[in-house]
Image 1 (cartoon, rainbow, N blue to C red):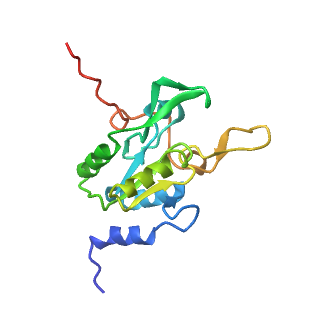
Image 2 (cartoon, one colour):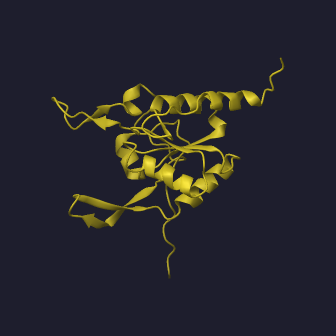
Image 3 (tube, rainbow, N blue to C red):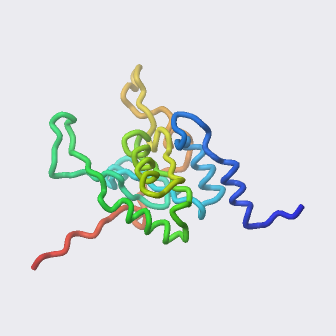
Length: 189
């Protein structure tokens, strides 16, 4: 039997379809790494956290780019949540389209998003992409840092599951070529 060379990465992707779990389009960090390693040019892997968060928490070079789904609004403080408000990146779709184009991919390609925990930005960003014409958008369940321990001396620390706690490659080094850096507003002078 003859196997076409170009079909091998496609077969790898098909065999790595997501397992039915918490979400139909949620992937574990391990599964994401396996898929990205098997077919790096066929997947767009996006870290959707605010770049300042990445600077202090860490990053993985397995990610293609950092394109924030929500941006911290440093001018709006939430008394209720005791933090800065976050607003949706108005150019999120535009940046995703450009990243796909740069890799020679279409909106049909598999896109995987990852945030800190998977729930506040990872899942919503994948849902948003699916609702806006990207049918193969997925997210990393438990995100980059994973879940917090609920009891014991490490209560509150994110030491369960997620990318960092799965022995997957990451570092505190933030690659300048991958981090989101929007252009400053043009001067009106």
